Every structure is written in C-alpha cells, then in structure tokens.
Image (cartoon, rainbow, N blue to C red; front, side, top):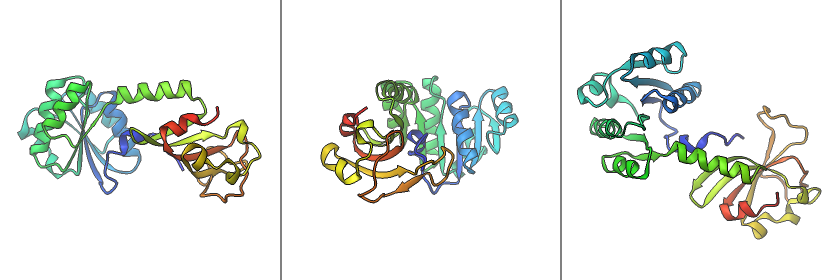
Length: 238
C-alpha cells in the first residue's frame, strides 16, 4: 500500500490513458514525470521551445509540442480534442491560464484540470469550464505544517476537507495492546485499514496486513493505515 502523492492525482480519472500537460514549468514537469512513469501516454505542451526540448531530452513525455495555447486553432491542430484529460499547468500567468482553459474546454476535452495561483484565479478557472482546480502551493504548505506538528504521520491522502487516509507510526501507548483493546472506532472515530508486518522493509510490496484480526497486537514503531475524521486523526497519541 502506498498512499503518497495522491492529492493531485486523485482528480485524474483512472480509466484515462492519454494526458496532455500544458505548461512545462516545475509543476508541469512533475506531472509529466509521474504520469509517464505510471505508464500513461503523455504529451507536453509549452510556448517555450527550450522547455519542450528539455522534456523530450529528459524523457518525461512520449511527445512534446511547442505552441501558443491561447490560440484555439493550434490546440486543435495538435490533437487536443482527442485527449481524455488535459492539465493546465500554466498557473503563474493568469490570463494565459484562463484563456487556455476556455480553449481546451471548448475543444471538447471531457476532463480539464487547471492549476490556480490564488482563490480568485481558481474561481475564474471554474467559470470558464475547468472540471477540477488544484492549488499545489497551498496543498504543499498545508502538508508541511502537518508534518511539523504531527511528525508521526508519514503520508496523508485527503478524501475531502474533513476526512483523510493516513499512514502513521503506531504510538508508544498502543504497544502490546490488541486492536480490539485500542478500539480506534469508538475512541477516535477511525477505522484501521492496515498494519505493517513485522520486519517488513519500506519497499516490500506486501509490507501491510490488510484488515488485520481484532486480536492482532500493535507494536510501537510499526506502521498503521487509518481512515476517518481529521479531528480524530489529530487526537491520536504522538
């Protein structure tokens, strides 16, 4: 089980096989790298010829094209209407971001994910047709704050603003007690999804026992994956 890096990608449809990423700055390159590494067909697009060439050199996408995404005809010529999902990663250039989002949506792309740099920017993107808006800097800031205040939480996947799935270190106070004795559901409003196996290595594919028996004992320093209300997660012992 690996729940890292899901915050952005939860907005992408699992059935999709073709993605286009418009804007090849840091965020766009990271999206290309991840999707390409997951085996999806990815096309990178940017108005900067050097960025396009670099993406191809670094093998971050199967295809990369230089074009002006504010021109509808250029997008159509590049085959954008044929893609399942297009990620608008321009972000810092608000006008170009909004126009590109409008153009892509009007071209008939069913799923458009757009990066926003501010709340107002995000509202405008929704107005012109973005299906999902992401705020990478905000999300990274929130994640940093959580990691500093809750160092035991190794990974977090937010289901919505109030509920998450987290991978967390088993607290010292749980050591030697059974799952039934701790009773996470009644005490914290959480459901235990998985518990790490003894002597499991970080890269083991089966390092977790899914839905462990109620008589299984917790071991301090091991890992558990729980789902539930964020308030309950915050109440877990450090």
